[in-house]
Image (cartoon, rainbow, N blue to C red; front, side, top):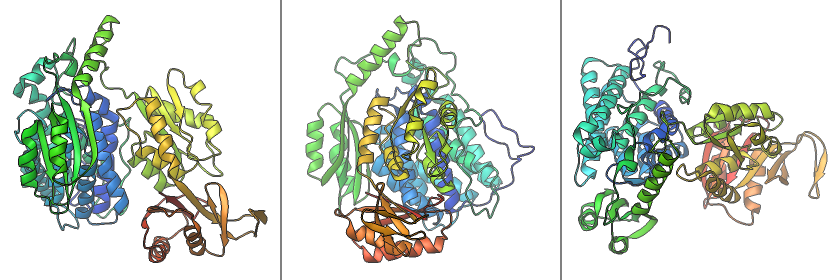
Length: 580
């Protein structure tokens, strides 16, 4: 905005137009922006990881947790009260929490959601109160709270927000104060924890929260009261993040600066316990003493457990007596730490950085996707895609378009999702032209396959493993594209006239009819295998009421299937259905 300036933290000053309330759609947009900003800076956060032990990568764990939160928000739709949006985010983050930092982040979102209960919109005082409750819930979740961690950063940011809200009803002012204090609080963490000071880093979880908070605030810049359409997420290439206060540290940093323990670090053990009727306090009392860094959080229906233990079998056995377990993960932290030390020694021998990362945290793995329509482009950005190249049916992007997207991602390795059968061959030419950047094409033939592939992406895995995971995920998705025939023809023994509505199921015409609903009904009725979930993406020319009417009719006829509706904005295809 004209006249607006940035302070040292990269946050706009109060010369912005005042913002007095945040609606559900704006809340969803802010969460997507936070996810994008976290993804852009996750390597920098990973580089700081040291506390309490080498327990995976903090940035990646927080990213995967927040991504799960945003996915739940997208499933429920954005045209909802702010409270409902945050409730979805809290539930999604609990289901997808990774590592110590991810579980604590899930509790931050839970507290934020609890404070907003029943609120259609939230004002500046409400934002400050929600941050305060986020801090309260996060502290309660940790058995032995330690200052100089993310808990401190959330608490001090909330206090700054509360003080700002006492003097202003402008949400920009409140969030800017919270972001500035979060950065300052992060810079103070080495003074509070010797392990951070000795390793030459600030607290990784605290810095991760600061990145999330800043991304949340950036989405609301320039927003005016009454704006109906949420702004797009801020992307990589926006003004730089304020670096934490460890610049200039020489030698090993982070986990590479921590000596191996003779007794080892044990195993990071995580899982979900399913209810109903779970007694959280009793479960916490029984499981938490079985290890260190214990986090046992949730409600009577679902409990998330994260504990470091030398005897994971004992912990898992005790948990299995409480309820059904799922999403079990056991990782050898000693092996993780030895890998870190080996990489550091190798880099020292080669004359490189001893911590295995170059500041300011250039990302190693990026994703570029092809998508038509504003709805699909926003969906892909919300799922963490670095660059979306416009294109699709009848509008295939050129090699140059795709190459520019790869270069603009700023990543050393890039996964390219063509999302259209006609684009795959073009995409496969990009690697030879990308110089030092390695480009791997995951051959998604349509948009639902691309979305399914993205949901399988694991930032902690390498390029080959992610390509394998994504291709496996695509194989479990069937796609239905509903459109009108442009000429007379025959297909699979059917006579088709120009203007007929046709259904193309995985590139094969299976149904012909007079209207979209009849054809969609026929597809679902005649499927050999019933899907559990059908996601409907409406096209550019479809009114919202019309799309809702179609999905409502499908729900009535197929009560055993769960349906979701999202605006895709694609041309030529009034409806695209993803069957899972």
